[in-house]
Image (cartoon, rainbow, N blue to C red; front, top):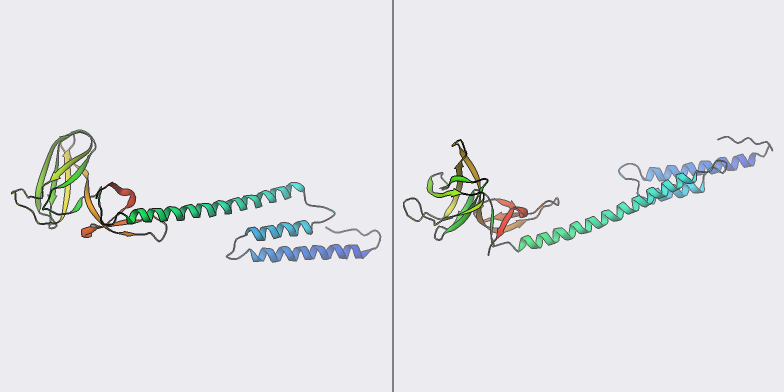
Length: 239
C-alpha cells in the first residue's frame, strides 16, 4: 500500500518501507525453515504469528478476529501434539503388557481353530467342532501326513454350538497309531443331503513368540511345524 506524503517528509515513507521489507524477510526465513521435508511445527507457527504482530501495517492493522483464529489453530496444534504423545505412551505400555502375557504362554497348551494337530497317540486327544445348526450326523475324518485315513470318529446328531470329540489315538483296526501330525476334517450334510464342511478347534503347544516390528499383533509359534496363530485367536489356555 503506497503512502501519500503531503508534508514532503520522505523519511516516514522510507521507514515504513524498511519495516515492511524486514517483515517480509522474517516471514520468508521462517517459511523456508518449514518447507521441504519438514512440516510447519509449533515453533515456526509461533514465530510467524509474532512476526506478523510486530510488523503489521499501522495504517491497516490486522483484524482481531484473524489473530483469534490463528491462536485457536495454535492451541489445537498443541492439543494434537499432546494427544499424540499420550497415545504413543499408551500404545507402548500395551505392547509391553501384551508381550509379557504372550511370553507366559511358551510351553503351554492352547486350543485354537485349525485342522491340523501334533498328536501324542499314547493318550487321548480332545478337539471340538463348530456346528452352525442342528444336524443329523457329524463325523470327523482323521488322516496322517501322507493323506491316508487313519480313523473316522462318528459324533452322531449334534445341536448348534461347539461340540467336543475324543480320539483315543487308535486307528480303525484298534491299533495305536504312530505319533505325529494329523489332519482333522469334520463334515455333516445339509437339508439337501450335500456334504458340508465344519471348522475344528484342536490343541497345540506354544514354543515361542514372534513380536511384530510394525506394531501389529504378535504371533504364537506352535510345536511340530504347525505354523503360527495370533494371540487373539486363542480359544482356551491349558497347562
